[in-house]
Image (cartoon, rainbow, N blue to C red):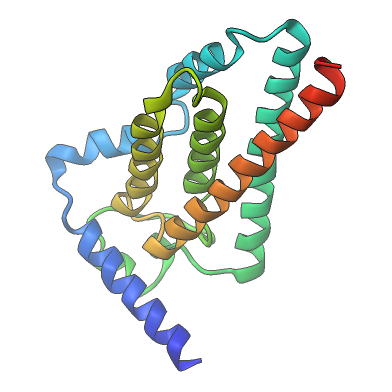
Length: 189
């Protein structure tokens, strides 16, 4: 148990270091990054790019796959939060007083924003890799920025974000694979 305690201590120290790097002049930017609706135009654009060369059945399957992926990552994230019951830093006595920003409640392990953004990034990269090879240079930094925003606003520890990204990679790959299988089986047959 001592090793886990040391890891959690290091996680708290890293959170406080990263959170306190913030500055009031950047707060509005990071609050915008962390807001769920900020990137809706990006999602619409990515959906357009991914569906550009697909027929109607494949587009329906794509939308269904993306919706299932986000639902899956959200629900698994919620399952982990209710199972582990690790308080968010902004709800943790002894931590919240040391944060620049943050006042909230609830559990935070692991980050849903991080898992959803990384799943979307991986799915998008895999879908667009043949035509838009450089998308990795946009999507991965975007997901990392979303994850960092959760630390900046005091909602998640770095370990929450790292685990969210890891789960997102798995989810994005899983649902891309599922989409391709269903497309071959029911659309391209």
